[in-house]
Image (cartoon, rainbow, N blue to C red; front, side):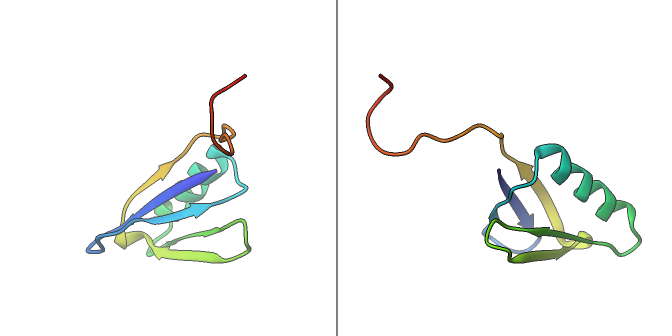
Length: 76
């Protein structure tokens, strides 16, 4: 699953591939926002952790769980 994280005052989004479902990512965002001075933390598919203070979050865009086609050409 691909998610995009916008950080205030930063022109580029952070793009993260994660094994979490859309529901799990949304729950992580909700828990982080509910905490006083919380941080949103997520782990990507390579095991790296991305940590953003909630006060700096612009948005979190959660992509679909669908598989992407690989290679060139159309469907058979």
